[in-house]
Amino acid sequence: MSWLDRLIARDHQLAATRYADRESATDRAARIRREKHAARVQRDGDRSGRAFRRRFT
Image 1 (cartoon, rainbow, N blue to C red):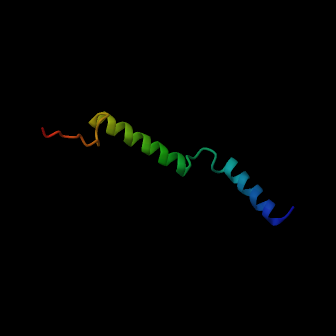
Image 2 (tube, helix red, strand yellow):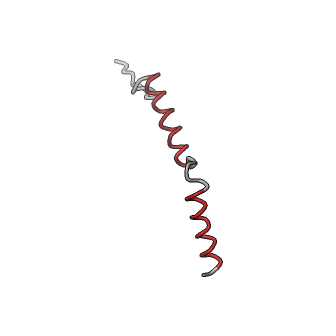
Image 3 (cartoon, rainbow, N blue to C red):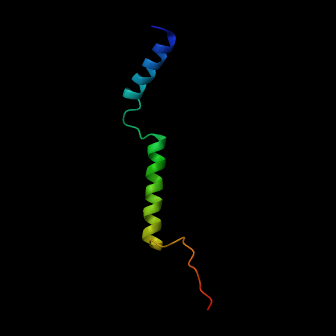
């Protein structure tokens, strides 16, 4: 087994044991994005952020 194989195996072992119950940075960012979107929709409604066209007739 080469040193790289041992390094990769140790990385997998750490991920399985030490960081097993922690939320990953990617999952955290996605959760925060979903929460902000839900709060914005609840606050402003579905049509917020869209520019409404005005007709001048």
